[in-house]
Length: 401
Image (cartoon, rainbow, N blue to C red; front, side, top):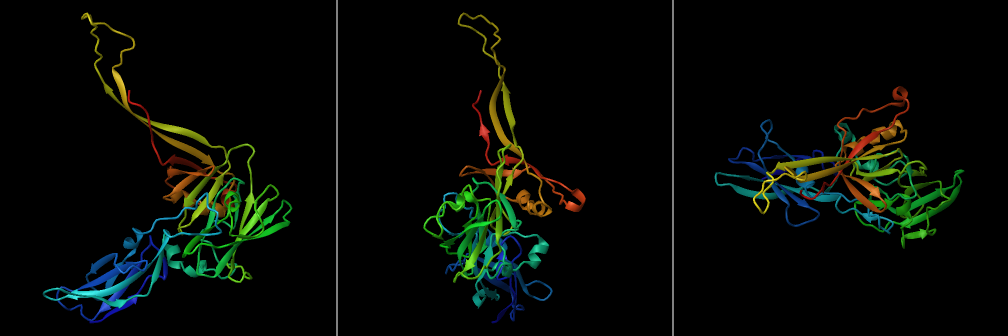
């Protein structure tokens, strides 16, 4: 009995893309032969699933895509607007798994499980386009130097309000131990460098990055004191440092503080392709509307009085409204955006999870009423913005008539 693993998914793979194993066996000619594929998640000694895979007809190989099994286990970890730590582990955003291969065959079928055991691999709550998936490698996100990305495709410079909450998500391989924040005044001169300990523990973590979230960091702030972001700060950088505090191990994200005197900004927070959460501020005027659905029935008004007289009244109701549902919608407008921002915001339009920030509250948005998006280019489209209609993730109901 011999089962050989031929190919595997990437060591660290997005769970909404294919995660294909192939294997071979010396016993595929046996009667009633099937490969047994057992999947163990997060170090559990109890298998999550057993898949019986018949040999494919061309070469009698086992070809099995396990991503749907793992997908059901992962959710996401949106940042907390009350977090006071330097970093937070995202236990729902990634998992470890081991696949064990065996086989069954015989006129009376006998099973031979766990003949060959693969190494531990990882899945994250990501979903990439086909070409992105082909090129994807965790090396691009493994902290090492200033070229390493956070788990976001957002531009290197972002706009934020003093009232914003938000976080940057990253892959933790054990090297980064601190997050640094350098603040600048309106002339671009450095004000101070702050440092906070990464107190979380997990493969995926997040660090605070927007003003309100940064100003909540408590005991983990080891250099500088609160408030990190005050009225003297015009912009700031956020990045990660290594375990000896001498080397930058991720890219820097630059945040420019911008307030709008004319309009109340609308801030949307959304699950991105890589399993992290991104944010974007719409600085244009917004408008709210309500879609109203009514259901009616028709009744025969009872017009007899106590003396048997049949009379009419202008207040008689024949049509009665017994069902009223209201869906709130919000139309939002961005300011002028760059070509890079336009490409990135496709992730917002496609995202299955979106929230509107209202103070420290996050209000669920069910969907964005947009079915297509044309990528714009500065050379041909010159100036452009983005306009979205949001449908909230709840319905309102009125009394019955």
